[in-house]
Image (tube, rainbow over all chains, first blue to last red; front, top):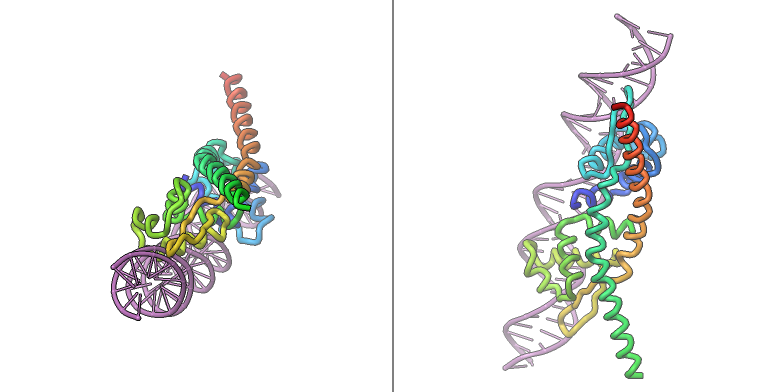
Length: 104
Length: 104
DNA sequence: CTGTTATGTAAGTATTGGCTTACGGTAAGT
DNA sequence: ACTTACCGTAAGCCAATACTTACATAACAG
């Protein structure tokens, strides 16, 4: 989860992930639509893979990368953990708002 | 959204956020439970604030930080954008699995 | 009014990290 | 076989950044 969050933080790497999420693709095709070199994309894919966000399989000389369905699960769960806290905070805001209104 | 993701990437800063999300607290109290200096926490809080993840208000000489309810919204929305893609990938896995089973 | 508490900011440092070029290795085409 | 295409990795470089100590400011207590 730490690694997933760290992986998605970089804009370029996030662009790589978004591209792969749209549809599986080889490294070269991914690098085509980005303003960085192919090795850079390869390094980003390595990080994404180690974070459990993408999967790869050989297909001839090319390597096809696709999204890893299990990758986003923990991240989403972690986020939802604070969703409740955020709602509580929002409720507290409404409380304060009501109190202030009383003073008018 | 970029800034939010970037802010939550750092482990220490994420710990600060989690602490604040649990319950509002002044800077000193937050720094108490962390292995870094108080100024470091202050800097982390600044980043979190600019990312729209926390709010602060003066309370005497102390500054109380709390979670910003609106902060996690865009992040969650962005994540859900790929939830569908992940499910599609999972369905594709099942397809492949079924095909393989036919060959047995 | 002075000392203490609580915090933000500046300056400086060291580490991390993303990028490029160069290279090596494997698979396909001729 | 030789060449071409596709890819991962190593080395090196430069920018970003997380951390520290030192300093300046505001509020409260005595």
